[in-house]
Length: 344
Length: 220
Image (cartoon, rainbow over all chains, first blue to last red):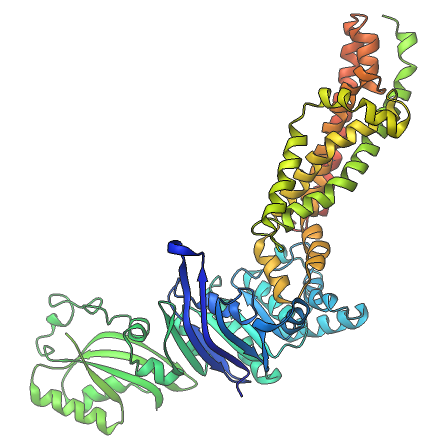
């Protein structure tokens, strides 16, 4: 049984003709110990989805089962107990501004009447875990965004929850800080075994830490699967729009006059290479050019190296000469690099 | 102008004004603080929405706020006599003062508590806080700077009302201004008492501003 089982979840706001459906018949399983991503454009319903998990938002219909308990059927008291098993962090950190870092982390323990000495001890050790030793007495206004989110993470983890929900937790942070927070979440997932649910509109967040992902579009789950599967071989239009940003209409930054047009040889077909981590990080395209003896034009590229392996997409325009183009495709197949023909 | 007659009365009047304001502020908060919190908690976007109740309570508070103090003062005389045995004197004046001040205090508390970030309340709910815990551990402590400012503003308003009450037999600084200044057409006395009252207001206001700033951890 999955740790979180969402079944036929529907959420409508308002009623009558003005009613807005935020979630429409959503079903999802999130397994214990994984880092699960939910990605979608703003307004797609992803935030509502995560808020339905701890019932900050009450579903209109359907069920949300966390550790075997149907959240929608709990009494007010039981719900408060169940929520202590589900930590949550937010885009805006939501720290208590009149409390120090230590007092913030202690807060959920106070709520469940943990003796003060014990709570202080735990709060101290958690602040150490998130790398804020020495800042126990600082107020949120004295901390940077990244530090505030670290305090929020420590606070969310204080009651030792099974699940940590992250609602756009890095969206207010700069790229470098985002990276460090994601690293911390990954580390906590590894060391504490806490299941992490990440809600985001940023691809790089999912790529960086998630093992599985669901793409949510227009209030429905468009696609769900392992991150590699969904990102490299998106099946639905919604997924393609998110994963392949240049896909809609013309390729961005590409035009006959200024793009490939300046190199006469490169007037052939467009192909999209997908790197799924099975290729080591090496100059693939340069190798291909050298071994085939003809230039190609890079129309679009979004690749990155993670732990020495290559991930992402590159769109190439092959030479107009059919033989050379064929030679290049053969070379790619030999190298076991998957590619698809790209619409021009 | 008979300063030898008036000056010795000032310390006593100052003391009377002080305890009228202090006692009224205290009683107005005993009633107004819970009332203001109830208004926030039962509001549409509150942690325990109760639409009809909130509307009725809001209407009652607005009604009481709308009654001009000078009229309320006279109107409440029978009630004040019933409670205190008399309508005359600074102690008796605490009754109408409190009744006119608590709706003001309730709105004051409401506006401070509403300033607490909705996200922080949500985070607390997500941690399993009960409504009572949200009130005592989130709303009140987080709104503290605003509440202190509001208390100072309430106290200065009450001081103003207390001067008005001397027309109905109340004591304090306002009574000297009216009885020895206004009724005797002695502008010098009236002016001096006005200055004393203005200084008193400044002191309360300054204490409030400083207390609020010192207690606020957002700006350091």
